[in-house]
Image (cartoon, rainbow, N blue to C red; front, side):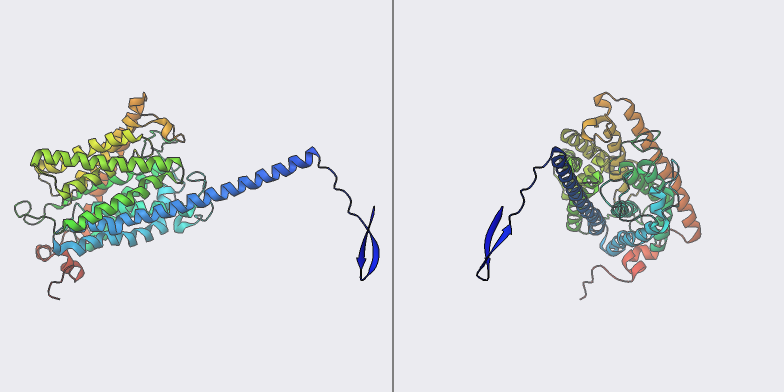
Length: 460
């Protein structure tokens, strides 16, 4: 068919466009498959971006738990002459452990190795790039996973400083923590979270449920804290001379920052922004709240009033107790765990510490060691398989009685490694550079004796 049209006043005939041939079934199927593939790729890219964004935020939240959270919490609990020295111990871990992690300890914790320790394949972060490692997390870069786990490696040794607050030399503290990262933290992290680890929940000899660090973080740090406090002895004048916190206000702020940051600690351990993160987030909040109420109720019954220090201590105890369980229990299970741990840790701090007379300055063992141990065991009671289908392990109350044994094995290994490793490190450091400040320096305070400055200069 010819159609007329005009060009500069002259009528011209033009060929009409040919009619489009009808699409075949094969064409339509090919187009549909192409669209489905494009939609799938877009959804995968969106999930990767969402998961990676959540994990980077979680890493920042966990770092916030160290500084300012733990630094303020511990700093307010010591006497004012020691506040900077105490806060510097936490801050130093943010620097020293980061460098150590990049050089070698990440490889020891998460590199390919045997059932007890990683190898040296990833030293200097070799092979730790921007592509995911599906063995750990399929939707986030391995480098994101690495830096997230770094934040755990930072706060764990920092927790120990609460036991020897006001009496260890800064130089000794640095050497102690570096050796502790090698001898205690790296093997424990590999056994629980490393591929092929002895306690790994998806293939270990004794699959121990530890979602975010009940054994790896809190049992190791808390038990090491007790060993260190016993080895070093009491502060000058303890317990005859009163040594109350110089600023509960600072500790209160620190505890609130810890509570907020703990959502990155626990919900971030889902390694993605899915429903498991939601479950862990809710469990974390409920556990902390129940423990704060439990500790406060016990204190109220015993002393007739609730203290701010008791309430925030209970909150931290609950956060510790729910850490191993966060990705495995229901909200009601989290409430029970928090309540039990809150009351138990109050008893440990108020009764057991007084009974044995050891000087765990800031109750690192009473909260982290005791709370982490009980929390890990309670995880074996309350775990439900449907909460975390990727692990699919029930606890004792759901009929899986063997899981309680696995939890005890994990706790026993954490205790044993912490006791033996810490004693060895303390002995070596003590016999080489010495652990404790002189009596004169202890009376002066760590701020001036170790750092040459004061946290509070009232003269200006």
